[in-house]
Length: 518
Image: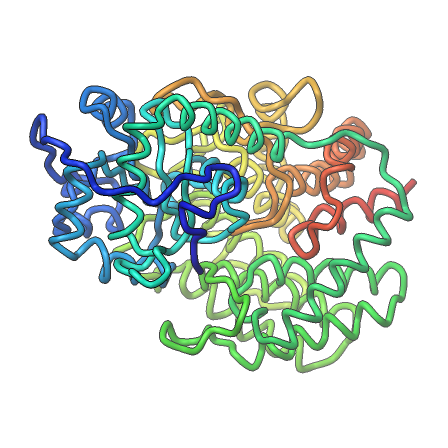
């Protein structure tokens, strides 16, 4: 993890400048003590005057005529912990931040919509993906410079915060119009990247992209990067599906090699284990849930006992966590919880683990009571104001369909159908596909354009999973309208997946299923 130095950034070639005196026009105090998650509240001890995400922080930045320093992190992120220890616990660096910026801190898991928005901006700015996100914003919330991990001090390369912070503050003051123009360009490019590109599903194109994805899985398996990589688990599942439908032994061989590498490190590696070159740092529970789906699928298509045995062990472990074994100091977020529940339900049914299936069903019932309202979909968490996120709706609908398949209980099918109706009413884009949020973020500093994501990241791509859910609904209800909606969703992104490799796995798997049924 690293960030491109400010003075070498292609979009914003800002020169190295001397720190100018910036007077303090009013006290800023750390406001994390009463934050909504433990990840944020722990930052109350930092000397940095962190502000919560919201219009008040950006209004303060406008009042003080300063840029915003946005930091997006999470519990399951070693780079985030490293920056906290090295940079944000440093009183000298905190003093620099507090005098030149309005610092805003966001929990990636509490606000995945904010995280996705600024991850797209950082990818546009610096070609980087991953967490933490360190982004500099104008008071209207537009990004003009950023990266992922920055060391506290690096005078040799100029990549340290001690070097970058004065650069950014001076450039924001002296080159304001240029920065505003560049921020607008970054926003437009990021929106274009996430907006989708309509086309027709072409078997040859999908086959070519499958080959690209297969190569990505092989590289990740050989290097060991697959061990903490959630998109890789989705890619392995797509390869196993390809073998199950087409008998492609090349896909099976690559999938087996990746599974063997992941099994060698299951249960998940300790936090201080060496990380191979190119590895991601994804949430361990989500990686394990993705691996569980792969193991159950591998057992189904090969009949090899080692995959079935490993799936039963992992299903039991995840079911135990759902049943109360999870750490109590972490908030439960709907999208992640539902994905784990759905993974256990699908795998338990495949390998005949009735105890794990019952535990997952109980967890789903509890989740529905806490977050689901008929006619309105699901909330992101039991507490907090975040609601109307596409990923939450799709993961809960998917888990309900898995429960319906396992038990035949029609109340789960009714919930999935109700969420599908909410999907069309609140999330549908007339140009195709579904927006990531039902409405613009009310806490954003300015009205935000809604984005649409289809590629896998910390969870399956929301639009790709929507197509999967709609196909499952079509099969469960014999109503062709759901299938038509699934195909239209896939077509909305047909020209947006080229060269994306393993991140296109869920899309490719569902698209190949659609073509196979025509």
